Amino acid sequence: MRYDEFSASLKEDEPAPDLPPLLQALWWDAKGNWGQAHEIAQEIDSRDAAWVHAYLHRKEGDTANAQYWYSLGGGKLCQSEVEVEWREIVESLLGEESIPG
Image 1 (tube, rainbow, N blue to C red):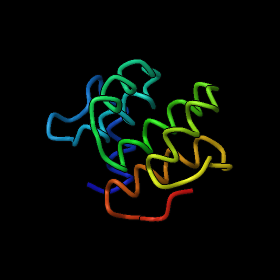
Image 2 (cartoon, rainbow, N blue to C red; image 1 turned 135 degrees about the vertical axis):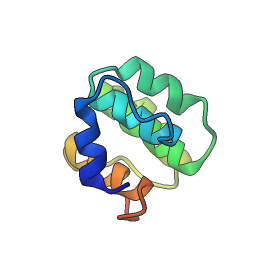
Image 3 (cartoon, one colour; image 1 turned 90 degrees about the vertical axis):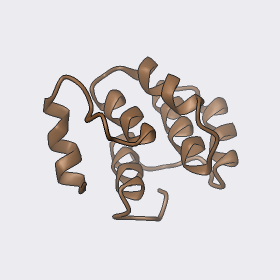
């Protein structure tokens, strides 16, 4: 799947069943369901999951919690707009981009 396909899938009511969990989390976040996105992200133990988790807390406005999760993911607090970071994460998880923002 490419970014444009992922983005187009946001018109659906549910994410594709074969979509990896972290992409499902970002899909739910884009659909306005932060709680579902957070529930998925917090159940996964990986650097990518820490990045998604950090992004979600930054979007929520919980900077201290976001910083904690960014540190677990090997990064620091992102300074770009949340929409820009969301796309960076999606592209990275899809293998289109690999540099966190």
